Image 1 (cartoon, one colour):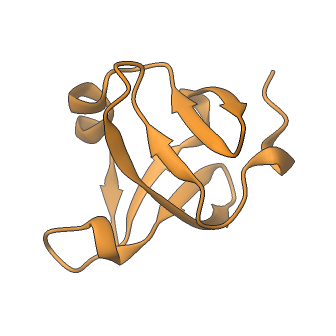
Image 2 (image 1 turned 120 degrees about the horizontal axis):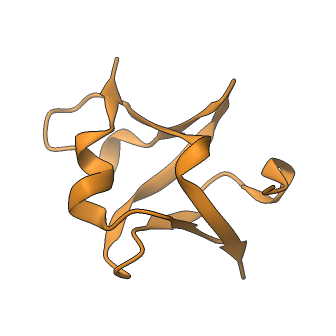
Length: 76
């Protein structure tokens, strides 16, 4: 189980393939809210914390490749 308290604001989120997915705005319940700056549609996107494989050196690595993780995103 991942210690979600290790996920910090402005941490980079990368897929299992090492590709940038987004930047953490903050945790919101069981989701990571990503900043708008990485969004092409000027909306916040969310990724479920269940996709987090590890947090290492301030980087959040997901268990899915970036292209797959993006299909799981929710928008607001």
